[in-house]
Image (cartoon, rainbow, N blue to C red; front, side):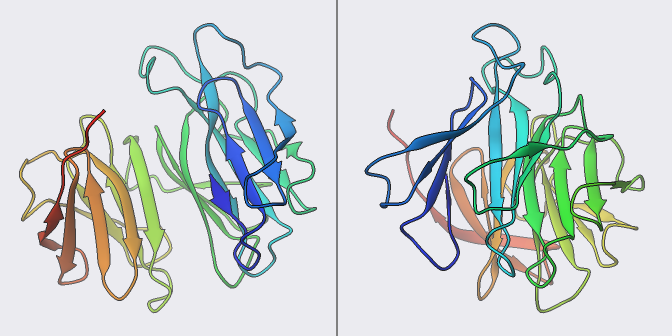
Length: 234
């Protein structure tokens, strides 16, 4: 689910397996379907829009990324176009075929000051678009890693922190918009290959790994320390 950056009444919600996106104007009391991926079915590969991102500089611009459902990963890949874009606040979406097709899109992050600059965390590493998802540059120095999440440090232009997912090795950092990367940084984690499921920067950078631990960073993401832990009951 994604919330409009200035109007909390507007929500976008996606299903993890049938390629649909819904929009609400009343804080989630009622939803209208605004997108249905044409190749999504109820058979393998199950696919859904795992990431939906509003642009902060222009909330009418929204990007959505398709991914294989977690219950079938990594047995197959998403089919068809994986990047969709809205320019009317989420009332409609258009597909944008690209070199990302065939890879799961785990996370889309938009530059806060420029709605055309988009970063994609994928099962084949990280990509950067300078032109609203029309073209993508592959961050090939990072390689074909399953990047589950990434975030931008707005106080340091060009600073990107990425986290690996399944069979990963931790945190990777770029200080030049994804051209070069250093890492992995896993000092302070409980495992040498932590599953990094989420990263965010508030007053300090925080991450959540697959074992439900919250850790905070030191030395700009290179060393991590315990923040808090909690148990999830299903």
